[in-house]
Length: 478
Image 1 (cartoon, helix red, strand yellow):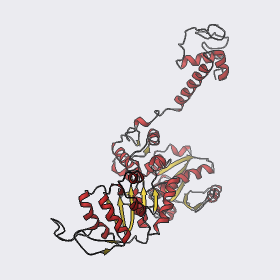
Image 2 (image 1 turned 90 degrees about the horizontal axis):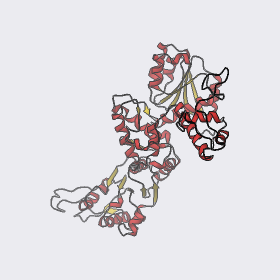
Image 3 (image 1 turned 90 degrees about the vertical axis):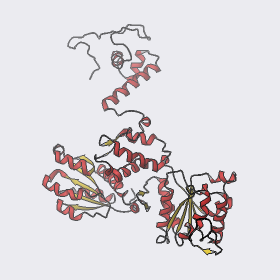
Image 4 (image 1 turned 135 degrees about the vertical axis):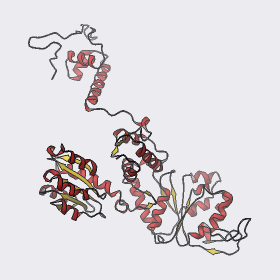
């Protein structure tokens, strides 16, 4: 594995496993070892995302209670090492359940520990946006992603942030276009100046001109004093024009003139005012089609679209769907008095199967509603209102084996047109065993003699007894 940077790891153990430390170091971990809970508290760095590995086998409960200060740190993703004897203790189970991402029973292979620590570390770094990908936070919203389309988006943000060229952001509703615009602004030389966002589709058309460019006193009835427009208010900073595809043609002409000249005139005024802004625009509308239909000016589009960014829809972000769901849960879990621990398998399956037409905005709403409505510690597909998108209910291992066995028998019978001798040979079992399994799975009525289509001989409704064998036994039964 090519390691690009060292990841911090706090290893808490009475006697550290030197071979494990050597292996983790070779995998890119910067290991700090604490031999006591008090030393672990001293080595804890709340401002640094890290993984934590705690060997609980040799610590007393009093010592572990001291360690809770470190276990509570949200910037540390803990993995517990335990032996079976300690796992039966209620206090140990509580600590693992409340504070650890996962646990493993000793002895354990070193690569397994590395894998679990990597997962815990990855989840923790989602709380530090610059550690993940150098993206921005806007109010209560954050950009989170590890898939290649998102990584490409983050790289593009860093590149375009240092230029003053106009940026056009294309993407479906709810994908986070305004967050991308804000991320560009906050990484640009203009970050200390205003970031002014305008939703062109939310302002009535007859007010759009005055909202964009302002007006002078007396410009129209009710204009009792001068008003600075949004464009002028963004002087020195960034102007974000959201839903630019909804801009009426009259306003498109005025905006084009401003982009060409860098100057505006307030409504009712004669003074030409120089305004220095960086323009970022976005829309979910197909502007190519809008230009073809005459609803959007091609010359304006080419002024706005010097640099283009395409926001990936949530359904195309693969594993990010689950990562983002966990991130939202972690962020809003205090909305409920119930301690929500995570997502049930049915919820994970449904989230991957669902198309997410509302994208990230919809996921935030569904997860927040589920946090409040969930009746157990795991959010289910029903809590997300996505029950119809789960293909099957959860089943035990025994149920899964029975289902697979039944399908294998059915397939063999179909392939061989219910010739039992041939189907049994194909399955690697005796004809009598096949008959017993068919009866067990409801594929043939038990106790009903039927004729094998291969030789016409009747199949027994009750297996013959042999000396030293219990009734209804099976020679192939294990």
